[in-house]
Image 1 (cartoon, rainbow, N blue to C red):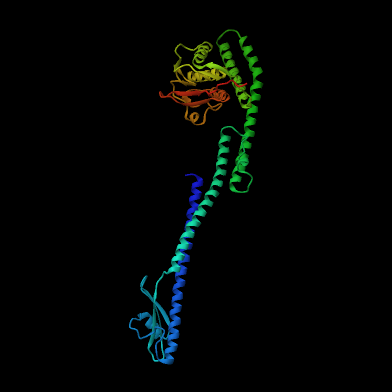
Image 2: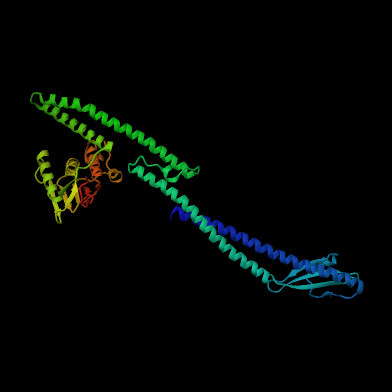
Length: 415
C-alpha cells in the first residue's frame, strides 16, 4: 500500500472517529435535555397541583393522593420534606414521577409517560447520520487530494534519487517539488546537496584518473622501449612483460577517462551480427594466441543485421572473453540470438557484489576468480552505455559467469 493510500486511510479513520464521537455526544446531550424538560414539566405540574390542593382540598392537573405505585425512593424523598422527580422503567415504558407532600400530610403525585424518541429526535438522528456521512465523504476527498499532493512530491524526490543513482548527477529534487518550507522540501534540498557533493568528488576522481593516465603514458612508453633493448634472458622477459601490463593499465585508464568525460559517441554501421561475432573471435584468437577450443561460438536462429558500432562491440566481447579465460574456466561459449550475445564461462561465476552493484573499477571481485584491476568489465559496461545497449551480468545454468549484451533496435544510422 502506497503512502497516498495510507495517509488517506489515516485521515479517514481519524475524521470518522471524531465525527462518530461528536454525533453520539450531540444525540446523548439532546436525549438528556429532553429528559430534563420532561422532569421540569412534571415538577411544575406537581408544584401547581399542590398549591391548588392546599387551597381547595381537591387534586387537579392529573394529580393523585397517596398513589400506591409511587416508587419507594421518591416516597422517602417526599417524607423528608422534598419535592422530587423520579424516572422508572426503560424505553419504551419509562415513566416520570413527581411528588410533593401537602398540608394534610398526604402525598400528592403525578406521573407522565416518557418516550426517549419522538419525531424531533428521529429527525435529529437522521440529520446526524446524513451529515456525518457527508462530512466523512468530504474529509475523504480532501484527504486524498492532500495525501496525493504529498505523495507526488515524495515520489518526485524518490525519482530524482534514482536518477542520481543511475548517474544523472545534474538532476534536482528541489526543481521537482518546488520551493517551500516543509519536510519534503528539506529532504529535496538535502538530496541536492548530497548530489552536488558527490558530483564534486566524482569530478575530482575523474580529473585525477585522466591526469594520472596522461602523465604515465610517456614514461611507460619510454620504459617499454628501453625494455626492448635489454639483452635476451629471463629477467629481460619479466621486465618486458610487466612493462606491457603497465601500458595496458594506462591505456585502460585513458579509456575510462574518455567514458567519464561523456563525450564518447558511437560510429554506427549496419552489421550482420552472427558473422561479425565469428570474425571478431577469430581476430581475438590470433591476437591473444588462444588455445584451440577455448572459445566457442553458437548461433541460434537466422543472422540479424543490426545498426551498431562494431569496434565497440568487439571491444566488449574481447574484454568479456579475456575476463572469462583469466578468472573463470574454458571453454568460453558465445551464443548469438537475434540482437543478443551471451558470453558464458565455466568458472565459479561472478561475485555477488558485482551482480548486485555492477562492475567497479579497481575491484577484481572474489578471490576465487583471481586477481586484477577490475577495469575490463568496467570498460565493457562503458562501451555498452555508449551503444545504448544493456550489459547484464548473471549466473549461467552451469554455475559459471554469464554476461548478456542486448543491442538496441535501430533502423537508421544517425547523421
